[in-house]
Image (cartoon, one colour):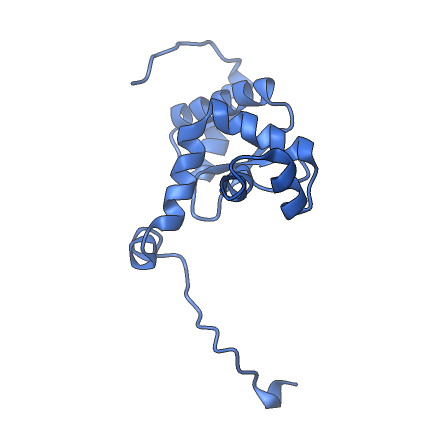
Length: 145
């Protein structure tokens, strides 16, 4: 359920928001909502950054490290133990702790990403027709060397 918030934007900011939304293929209201949510999340977790995901949407990343969902996926294999996960991933324990804290605050966001990993490939390809599939044979063409 969404609540409505009305805000007054300076004209130049409204124009830039509209331009960015058009570039992203979103309505200005959608982009404003996403940017506001990310801003609040970054206030709570200053080491979390956001970037565009290949299949659409946005993904959270621990600054200078891995994507949060990837850290959580591995942490689950270590019973959410930050030290063991950090050692396995060869990243700092602090990075893992940031990811764990972010996950505790926003589990639905990360769980959605993790659920995508469990979906059949065919379903993913139907939803993302822009993705091209290449078959890796493991054989190397001798003439290419």
